[in-house]
Amino acid sequence: MTGSYIRDFKHNYLVIRDDRVIGQDYEIKMITKNRIDGLISCEDRMVNGEGFLYYDVTSKHVLKSVMSEELIDFETVRTLFLSIISVCSRMEKYLMYDDGLIFDPEYIFYDIETKDYSFIYYKDEDSGNPEKLFEFLIEHLDNDDFQAVEAVYQMSDMSKRSFYAFDEVLTWFREQYEDNKADHPDNGDIENIVHDAEYPVSPEVPVSVPEKDRYDEWEKEYEEKTKKKRERKSFFELLRGFFFKSEKEKDEDELFEEYYEETYEETKADDTGDNATVFIPWVENSEHKLYGTGRGNKTHIDLSSVPVTIGKMRGAADIILNDESISRLHAKLLRNGSRFFLLDLNSTNGSYKNGVRLSPNEQVVIEPGDEIGFGKLKFIYR
Image (cartoon, rainbow, N blue to C red):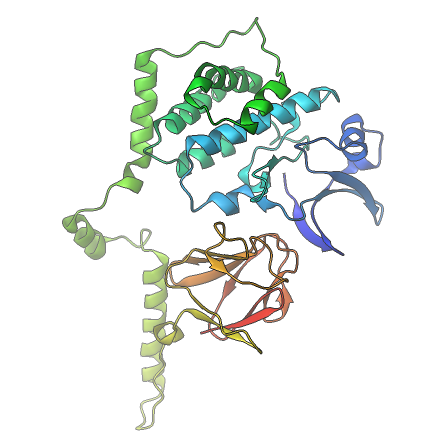
């Protein structure tokens, strides 16, 4: 699925081109004429003779952007999959099923205040396939949370079987939760979600808990996948990597330094006079800070420990900006090698680079001298 984000008056939309809008498609009618809890509300529009679906994602945040820097524990996994179970139950009343849900973390939305998940219903080759979701969860799992590891790997394994049905995975998860709910006395609203869902259990397709040797395989696979993330390289390995790294393995920092070293040598060769100007890469003199500009904005944002999240919701954002134009989660600043990036988090009043507003969830490179804006607040990157 390929979508683009636009802002229309006071709303942010995920827009997908779909010719079925022109016809009398049943599922298009269901998602545009009904409000189904758990699904992003949608409307169909005709633009220049072409059909488009507009999903209203105002004030919602992309799961991948919000949780990419966090360790995912069992409570997060449990809430996410119980939300999927619940929305599947509601969809059945409209004769729609889980094979129309998009499980890509780039198109699952999260409300940081209500802790609710929302999903896109759109039928294409990617819908109903949870592979990208499981890959994301496995990559960001809390390694020390045994319950989270067990649940995610078992569901991932089930989803890879031939002729699997995703409702089997959801059924297994619900049964495991019901069996263990005594271990979680503080369920609260989560328990109500399970009982409201009433997701059907198919007696023709029994789901069995795998034997110990199969679980040992999952555990071994998990350890192999997380080994690189959890182990620190020995001093010898670091030295070897520094001196013997191949061209393909060189990271962006090294390539960046090589580029400026070559540029510096060329400059010296071209200008050998007494007053020759020596080229000094800007990165060497950059402070990597955002300095507030304008009356009353004395905030300085240090980028030495990126990623950092900008917003006004305490407990959710790393940098709190107390201004009415700032969203709860407004933007994120990231780094890849020697390059810094600004990512808008679907903010209401927008993020800006040199006066140009970013599209919702758009990411751009920033460089020293750029003017960065969050709502009404402006900063200079130095």
